[in-house]
Image (cartoon, rainbow, N blue to C red; front, side):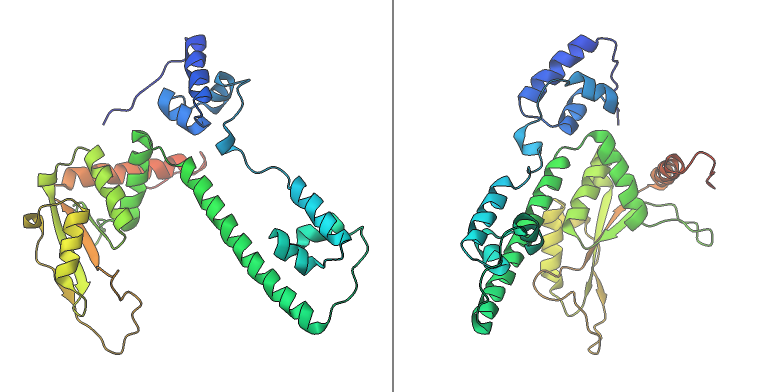
Length: 289
């Protein structure tokens, strides 16, 4: 794996490229990855004076909602009724309209119905906020440099992969997980490290009460692997008294991915991991290799 480097001597030339990318609508993170500029101060100087794309900006203050809330309050609506109309929180409404007179009291039945609609509006608003947060976060990591994938893969392996123990020296690269997305990232990492398909062997671990044949088909297709590279599936004995949650059509067991002749690769992974640990710790603290 090669790690591209960048010299910053030609500042004006680099700035010209950064400004062009900014005007195309790229975020700072995307410009950083395109130009391989990992100094945040320098990155800010390169795009100085260029406005950020609209899609990277957080929502401004809810001036329009505030004006509408005050208008509805003047018409005699309660906090609950305003919440139903606008879908914003009652705490915000309170701040916006607290200087306005209170409306006449409603009957208990009317108040209950309005409160129910208000709660439903709150749930819809919260769901919309959750989706906006997830979408914004997704855009922040939508591009991935080789260096970033390399570091993610090292951490992923050390969390989920097989590790050698002092009482059981076993230096081999083996990874097991039930999440297809984790498997996809791990396989991309192995490709980055130069591991070829011929070096990989697969095994499915699954409860005997599940559809093992369908699980084998799914994992072979997901990993884009020839079925001949799959070993015998391991079946876990079913315990009728157990209250398992991993049931249903989406349950496909776990996929084990083993790299053949991987002792040297394992030693490198262990070294990479402890290098990351050492870099993350304060300088005065030493790690034990």
